[in-house]
Length: 264
Image 1 (cartoon, rainbow, N blue to C red):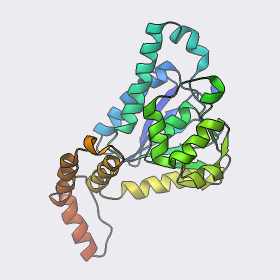
Image 2 (image 1 turned 45 degrees about the vertical axis):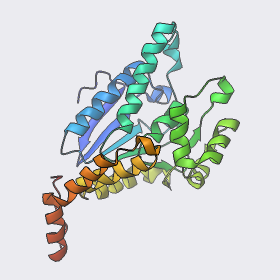
Image 3 (image 1 turned 180 degrees about the vertical axis):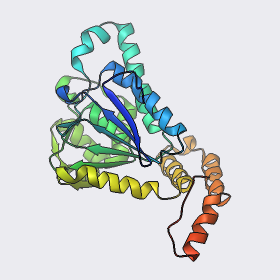
């Protein structure tokens, strides 16, 4: 798939859409063109019925994403107007990841810092290597951090750990991240990709409409009550019961075979 930049790779393999931040020489720091490419990739994966799961990761084993590419800030964030354009591109990228209806997994190896941790938090699941490190260094840089990004962190780890992450601005180990609930699984770094592939394949083999409805309901549960569209969630649930996949699931169970779900 043409992403518009060599710094982003998008490919499809066995029901998995791979979104890869590809700037390993800079620890996959995200540049403006990479931010711009993310919504295009997600839109393509969302529109492709063969893609059942989306996995995002960084090229190489040294970093998932180490933050923003500061080397281009003078050019891309040198004026108020430029800052606005740059920030809007980052917001669109994060929004596309958050709003993806298909299950998403962040496969993390090495550094997951600042904006990289923000990207990882947009995923439904986070699986990392045992040498990974996590941090939000905003307090060491004097940066203000927007509410939306902090809320995503609080939703995952709770207020106490979120405060620890922000107040100390230090790097946390993979095991500390697991204890906080920041990551779902910690694996030896050599095993991370094979584990993620198997995990994604397991998810891809399940009923897509059921997973979509569950994701919608879980996401609604994290929103303020007045922002929950429960009617839309119920429509997704009803679609499961009206689907061919529901009939296939029942038939496969009675016939003691693996179901072949089509997402319809």
